[in-house]
Length: 256
Image (cartoon, rainbow, N blue to C red; front, side, top):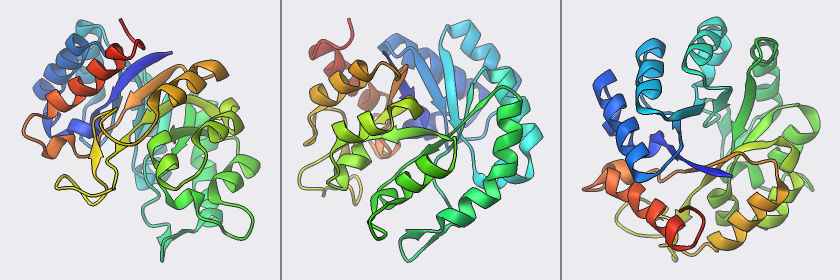
């Protein structure tokens, strides 16, 4: 399993083609082997050229739901050019009411576009937060999506932990839908100046990353685990925040 950088973490460093190339270069220098495009505008051709020049892999995106539904052909085109093999939904904006996801509406509205995306040879994947693990009467949204769609999951292991759900059991349960996952750490207690959630670099919070990474490797389906630190862009040294996580992965023996 390889490790990548979820660039939503440092989207303030990706506001132009030159910024994106510089960020690719910095992530490669840190040691990340792949990046996820998320949270900033980009043009497909220069982004692919920058990745090729730097020598870094682009795995997937988080793409807004309206773009997926209304501009499906353009979404497919951009992914095929950049080489990102997975169109991801980062957040079900417009489908949450009183903290509950309107999961049936979400599936209904996305299904035609997903079918077109998959017919083009791309994958479609859904990224969870905490909403998806709320008990809806003996099941949750993740269960519904697993049983009623063929979507992949961009499992955010940090958010799974946040909900009090067994992360290792969740990885095993959904392993056949996992190609890419996210690693996100939370301060204990979940408070601090960075955000309401206290998101921090890996190994600086209260999550047992060694156990989680061991399980991700053991299931054998996960190709890349992306470090996602949502609030790194608000810190004095955003690149440094991403480097801190990679240094911890190295210190714990997960990368050389």
